[in-house]
Length: 325
Image 1: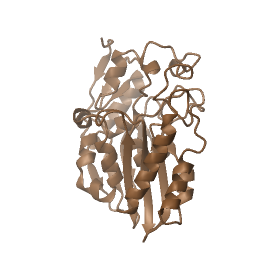
Image 2 (image 1 turned 180 degrees about the vertical axis):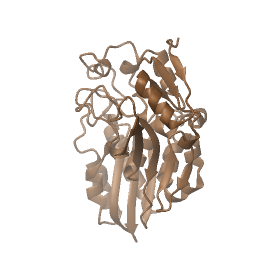
Image 3 (image 1 turned 180 degrees about the horizontal axis):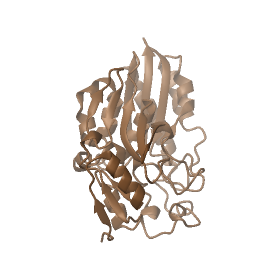
Image 4 (image 1 turned 30 degrees about the vertical axis):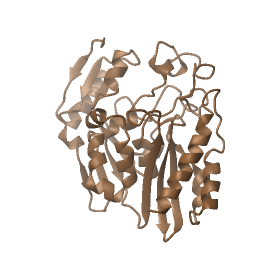
């Protein structure tokens, strides 16, 4: 059952920020995550501030400088089907199309997908775990087959977003507004690792809203892709995934940004993979070296060691595929 809360539906961004600042409220975009968290007692809210009537937060547009702007309330499904995204940032179209189910993609927003809460069954269940203010992460000694192999350090969740690692690989930036303030936050820096604060998912303050996401113009020779492995062919979150944004000069990779999904509490950059392929052609030897580099530093728990082989296989297959694009 949902707890009692006050519901506000402002029609302008300024009013939304004012209500949020004064009420210590929770932002409601598509609501696909927030409603479940409220119902399950994962979080509470005195006020729920709906953004649904603020049209300026919707839609996509190409700016004069060639950058691509996505409104925070734009449904994930709209990004998956947008022809400009498919042409210029194909990896983002693939990532958006892999999110959840068709129903959730039509309801869920891009900002919500970036800022969603973790899906750890201890965090979502009746456990007073570290992320909820307790003393320990139950995944360390418990059932942990879906938990992280990188960056655990106190809390072993995995970040559930598919669009976040792809947007990070593309160098996207979030425009963030507060009551009288505004700032830009790179998607790569949006999420907070447990080593810094095990009770926060993002760097956003309680009175701030992501208003839109900006992707820089694609470099000449950019090729991007996203793929995740999951238990079922639809609906499921990633067991592991890889987002590639590579710039080619002929057959040679000149610039590489590689992020992993489903294996860390934040979208996990893979600098070893980037170093292994930059300045090289994607021949079998280079791809094999990159796959090995992808799992350097991994520390699996008792039941998720399979993710090592899964990451290696995904990286190798995606590099082979992108070399042929």
